[in-house]
Image 1 (cartoon, one colour):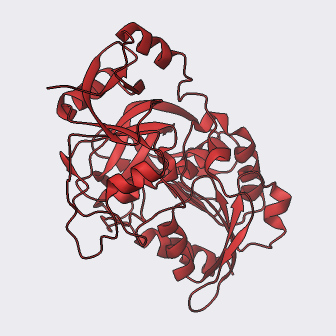
Image 2 (image 1 turned 30 degrees about the horizontal axis):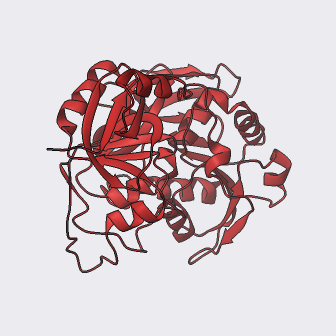
Length: 372
């Protein structure tokens, strides 16, 4: 069997397969995603910017693509790896094939490789740089040299790559609570829909905004979104958040927003070995004792004590870890007890499901309403 495309890891391991999507080459951090559905939401999630995504589910593309399930304005993955692409989509909502969108948006992919073996490598060795290349006579060493010349994810600030350039407003649905400042670090459309549905007039603000820009809309609350990159490289956003906390403006953060709240409170962050990505992650809500099945997409985590109440190292009073990942005891949520702020590491908006955690948007609404 002849192969046209190769995937090369930075450690020199190589998988030859078939071109999928656009032709060309692409280099990024290789990660795996365990969802069996929701590939459209994955592809259009800005948090995947800079990453080559491996789908662990073997058959991808069978429900096609549509205009309703887009989470943002484009596909963000750096590259895409599937074992068996669907040849013909079959779903009443399908408007075009997945291949059509990959080609149109220039997303380079590879198919026909052993994604199960590849996932085991990532689990054992950790996320690493990788590249998808046409097989064109270059040696494996040549490909490895190209991969290792690319930057690592640690230390990268990618917010500017995914954020909007100017503010836009989504009207509130129902009884209005007031203006909500959403700092767009890679926000998903489903998140904005949930916030508007809770009565917020949602102001989506570029990541380049200052604290004065945020305060200028007289917000009843501030929200930090999900997004790609290393939270330790977003010091400016941390300082803005500290200004929000000092003024005791209610705050809610998701994913990257959770990591930035952790840093604002004085905790550190660290890179996970291979991250959490998928729609089947069990998380314990320590307040209720309820176990939620949740959707994740993060390669970094907050370094904070999982048990008990501790003092914020940055001077914001008492803090506790509110949610814990049951697979590895990772910090999955923070709650400040002396300022109105909380966050979760996972995605309660998960449009493809599960929907166990949508109550968090109600919790945020109630926090703001009580403050008013």
